[in-house]
Amino acid sequence: MDHYFVSHEKVRRYFVPVPGMNLDAVAYVERNGAVKEGTPFILGPDMRPAEPLCSFFFQLSKSLAASTMADYAHDLLDLAAFLSRLQMPSDLLSAGEDDLLAYREYCTRDRERPVSAATWKRRRAAINSFYDWAVHAGRLAAWPYFRRGGGRDVLAWGATVDLDVRCLTYRQWRLLRQVGLRGLLPGGDADRSFRGGAPLRNCAAAELAATTGMRLREFSCLLDLEVPPPGRDGLPVTVRLRATAKYGLPRDVLIQHTTLGEIDVYRRTERAAVIRRSAAVLARRREELFVVSDVDAAAMRLTGCLHGRRRVFRVEAMPAQLRRITVIEGSRGLEPMALFAGRGGRMLTKQRWEQVFSAAHGRAVRIAAGHGLPVEMPRRLRIHDLRHILSA
Image (cartoon, rainbow, N blue to C red):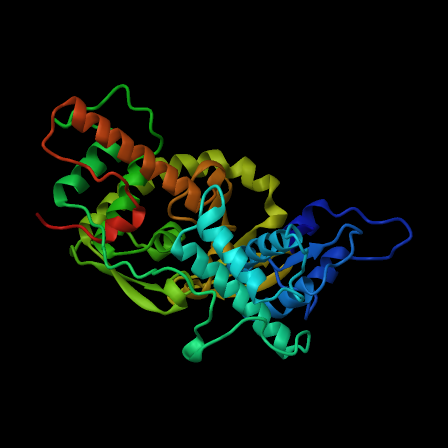
């Protein structure tokens, strides 16, 4: 089976009218009640919608995020492929308990790279969601496997509780920041062999994460107007997070004056250069962007044009996808409103930030070994570790 994901942007960019059909594809996909962005669409060998998966995901799209639906789609397609390879081939609606247990054993024990307990927990959640829907929708008379009280079932496997909270010592943090991200040598001299890009941006982002406890999605999706320049009074400022916060729960983040100063240095140098270079790229993509025409800094509200419509958004309520395409008309053309801007003026993706910190970690390890420093970096570094730094 082939699978696709609903994308309004691709319809706007690539749709070619079909001769003889009077169809406004953009208006169709954006109409009230249209299929939600990111909804999986499964097609069979005859290129017709494959049931029951299409109906399941149409229902699921009413309550889940696009990223979760994508994970569930890949999990259920993997299960469907496994069932079709059994000695007695089966499908999702005719599979029995033994078939599903065989799939669990295949995933956790027999495949070339068995999945972890956490990955299986997600796959089990997808399977449970599908059969819960199938029973309630009348596709099945009863669950195909035994379920005990408290939501437990025979597909449960492995323990996912991990009480180990990884952290960095202050020395490890300083080595990562100064040597890995900034590109200096242990003595503070510049390393002419350093080839990392945007060291001020990367250091400012790391400092922000370390001093505030912001998660990757929270600090990477900040807009420039959310973080004011440092004041003369030397006091910290408060930033309100909501749509980009974990579970969408609102919380306030306190940014210290020294961190504001470091961000301001980056803002006046590397970010200013990115804005100058990105105007032409953003101009070519204007129709895809949220072009802001009015900024109400007091109410933290943006007004602009998105896909031909006038829209008004409160900044704290703007999701990550919208923030990534938010620009404003400046003196040189379109300017990104992202605080941490990358090539072409766009926000860095999760994968790009992970590449930045992975390269910085590797450099810190090499320099520490080459100079005989008494600092042992952890074997693996996660950006989330910056939220846990020990003072000694």
